Amino acid sequence: MEVRFTEEEILELENQLSCPSGLNGIEIGTRMNTSNFEMTKKSIDALDLEDRNSVLELGHGNCGHLELITGAADGIKYYGLEVSETMWQEAQKIATNGQAEFRLYDGRKIPYPDNYFNRIFTVNTIYFWSDVGFLIKEIVRTLKNEGILILTFADKSFMKKLPFVGQKFKLFDTDDIYKIVEGSGLEVLEIMHKSDEVKSKMGELVNRKFTVVKLTKK
Image 1 (cartoon, rainbow, N blue to C red):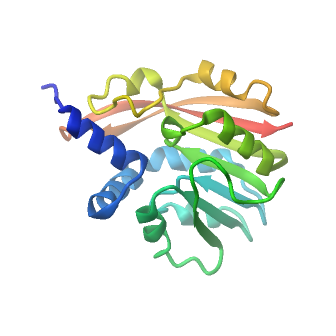
Image 2: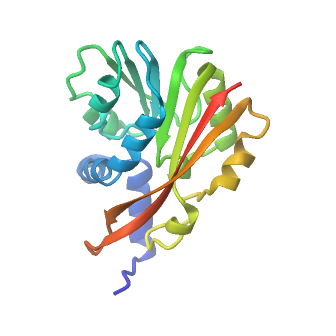
């Protein structure tokens, strides 16, 4: 049975997915942490974390996956940036022992110096970037030479079939990523096509195809 959403329902869900807010936002953040866990884990694995790496995540949500990062190697320092004040507040409830720093940002300007991070990653946020080209430049600016960037997203072929995906989403495939990073100073090291099972809005299991793109700063 096909689920039909009104334009108002689509807009509300898109707004919550792009920038969770209030009590509904907290619930959305919890659901996203669960449904995106496999994508997040594969992304963290692809970072090839080493001792004392500095790691930036764009769009950390409630950051229920923090221990996967800080426990991957010794002396990891994690930095999280969020456009959602609700998610920023939720993430700060996690006991971090000083290994994590959470900050709000405008979704464009990364508030850190040049060549600051060994690793940068983001999962399921690229759909909502207001200026993809600018943010890629910011990533390149703040990533150290030979540092690793992981971009993870559900494939365009999967996303365009979802009934709640409207105009607020920008959908991507691997060809789009090559175009985005062309001339940026980033080089594609590996493209990993993955899939997992997630619950649909009807509670049914569906096969989600997603891509993990591993890049490095030349």
